[in-house]
Image (cartoon, rainbow, N blue to C red; front, side, top):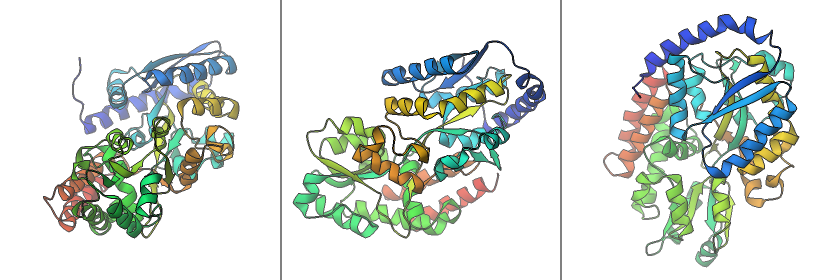
Length: 410
């Protein structure tokens, strides 16, 4: 039976649960002996993920002494909710793989174990790219380690660009010019996702950062980014239907050759390799700055676990190159570790190599416990502008008030 849980109730109950768990932490985590079964939650439910995940668990059980893994998977949209409900019922796993943006909510809930001392003793924190590593830091504490990372870049239909006599764009001006030249008939020059969910915000934030701003300066720089996208629609280079497109919808437009360029991530590469046309992928065009948005997952250990030492032992084991590289290759994901840049399929695949080269620029959406409210305000502003119901300046002004309030409630 499901029932709604409001954010304040979640934070209040989870805080109590975390405090209770903390009382048992020192006595339970330091005296482990004998076989331990760790409960593990994730959202990798698709069939294509299962061979790689099963191999990882088999590796762990063979390589970490006296540990067994009891895994449970939820649909993507359900995992964080299940953790929220588990905080109330006391039914939580020992460790989990969560979306990196979930660190905003979970990190402020005191549900996650503080791994700071263990990570410092481990001494490998400096082996990770800055964005993925920063995405695990909350309130000066290390509350997770990266599982994998990805980011956004610009895919180009090489035949269409050549026919139009344009080079892959590197700046906003070049992007606007190229998109206009590539627009013809029912084909748009550019496709991107502006859907009113976190998926759309994930695609919008790079424009905000490239303009030189951030959420705390949305009134000014949000207006700049919104005006740029509004101009693309006004000139017919970007379909106004993008306000309803997911990133999968965007890729479908690109595959159907009804978009000459698309903004998307490396998870589309396996499908794109089956396309009957040539394509290339380049860094997102810049304005004042170069920027892209960090995606991917993090490992976390729950503060309520009675086996935090053993769970940390598992996390540490998964970061060994002999374990991590085949796992990431099987998932088609990129490493968050700099020292693995020259190993695995991403070392020789030009497209994956491009995405890997952008990870140093990738920024995490690390804004605190009320990020969801700020994200919603960004999505509403983008929808208002791209559907023509508000000017960029007015939409940015309205959103900035909501964002400032949300971020001020940390």
